[in-house]
Image (cartoon, rainbow, N blue to C red; front, side, top):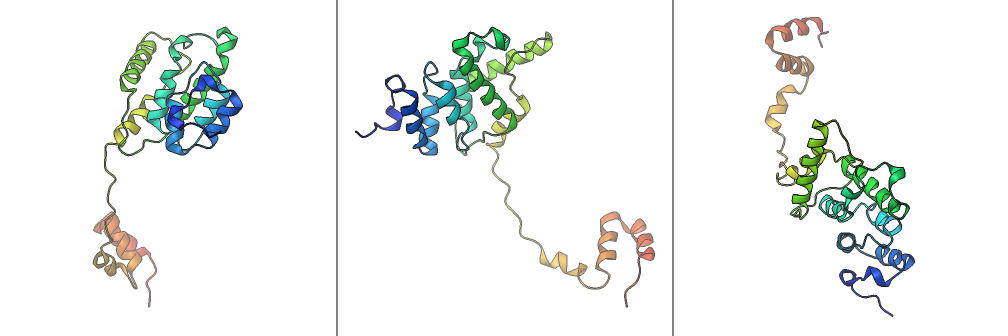
Length: 200
């Protein structure tokens, strides 16, 4: 029996093994869509954990998945106080947070950030926690995440071709001395040139 389209997947109608078989056969784009719609009440540690460890996952999807997991429920509980049935989900959140903070999830060109409002609210809570000397379990690195999100709007710098005419004067005898003089200035450069052995 053929599997239904990936974006029509019903997580409630399949077991862990079937879900793993499905996600492992998915393309990177299909995997991102499936992760964003995954039912956290099913098998988050085995299935969602595998999806979120793949290199094709991007930052936008990771943020959506992170907030879909409702991290606020357990953010101020110690690990031993998290109910047993939710510890697998909490470990998935641990790993997503670690990967976001390490820069594992990249920003894809032209992607939108549907979780922007939730991200801003979360970062506001983090700042309030810092001001009050409190910290939660999942602390997002504001610098890394904001730099990645800002960076995606900046076009890559075009590489400029080398100026061959500017290179030619440094070729041949005396090239090293000339380069040093140009680099550090004529005064100190002249003194260094007198200290270097002459050619010829």
